[in-house]
Image (cartoon, rainbow, N blue to C red; front, top):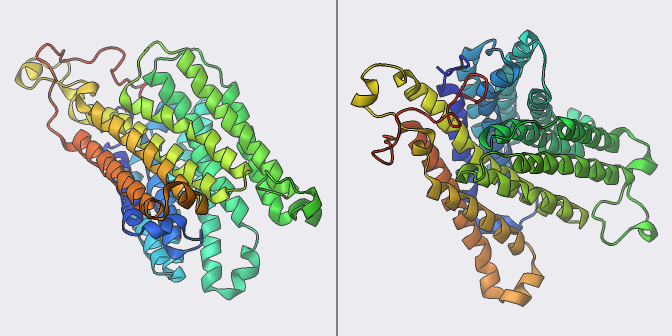
Amino acid sequence: MTATGTPAAVPLRFLLSGVGLFAVAWIVLSVRPDLVTAHPLHPGVLTVVHAVTVGFGASVLLGAVHPLVPVLLGVPLAAPRWGGPAWAIFTAGAAALLGGFWTSSYGLVAAGGSAATLGTLVVAVDLLRTARRARRIPWPAACVLASVAALTITLLLGLLLASARVVPQLAPFAVGWTPLHLTVGLAGAFGLAMLGAGHALLGMFLLAHGRSFRALRAGAVGVLAAATFAASTRFGPALWREPWREPWREPWLGVTSPALIATAAALAVAAAALLLDATTAWKRRMRRRPDAAVAGWLVALAWIPVAWGLLMLGRPSDAVIAFLLGAVGTGICGMSIKIAAFLTWQHRYAGRIGVDGASDAAPTPTLADMMLPRLARWTTGALTVATLGVLVARSGTALDAVLGPGLALALPTVAAVLGATAACGALAHLTWIVAGPHRPRSEGTSTTLAPSDAPTRTGAVA
């Protein structure tokens, strides 16, 4: 049980299963490198994309909110024991969803999507009940809660799209929802989570105090505007929804309808707000040198302007790859290490502090003793290079001209194998943190936590 009253096993299960499915996604790409350049609607591509979004990103998000939201709101979870069943239902649904995409069985996709949505709804209702107990809801908590709401909406829209393949009568109702499905999922679920959780976690891990919530407000408005404009691609007038005629089309612009241009502009506001908030935390930091896990999060943020630039260059699929594999994948792997360390320390070692004789019999490790910095740095570097390799491999004929047909053909395989190694390394790192025999790294290590590292009820996620 953590200091917030949440059973530690609940968020740790979400984290481990999520990172495990991230490794599965990279392993599939290493076995089937042809999927790197396949059509976005190819069954294998859909499997990999949803392994990263639902299996990995959504699972880690649902796990992280269990300890994080109570800290941000200052109240314990309303129903902490709901987390175990929610994890079981969600994980089973995610597995069925991926199996359905791989076999092109949309009945199985709909069934798996239903279970994943149900598991998400259980967590969302628990968070709603918790929020009602709080005296106030600060902006970081509001962004995190909104991200869970956006995840729920995304899963419901995906369920509609999948059900339309099974029930033809639903097909007319499913037309035109894809832009909203993508925008709410990528910018709403993941963008808002990075904005709210990043503000809170960077402030804690870098000891950056005194930051305002202006960037969070601007980012939330940007995401809401982007979702509104994306929805208008279905309900707006034809002149707003349809692409411009060819004479009016700018050659550099990848999206040509006014609705999609407005959506991209709103996403630029949200991205700028996220980067501004992280920059402010970096400038105000008291801890001059971040550890390897936090550095991974900061490296991941650099992929956000890259993704937006690829979108405006007319490469939306590459923009999604840069955001999911670069920003979301690298960032989540970094922060998962810190969150798992806090949770595990609180569960395994917090009871030793202040107990006579306990420290002498079994020295209490610090948070730093529980993490493997070299492995964390390897994970960040390898995921960065692997993502870059995937993007370069998608350059097609231009890549053949530079590297030659042989090297160009091998690049997707090399990039995917490197990504799979990095993701498996992240999973091994989490497993070590949760179950490893931690020991102080030197004889002079204190058996109590330094004030800057100690998990507290108000200043940490555990």
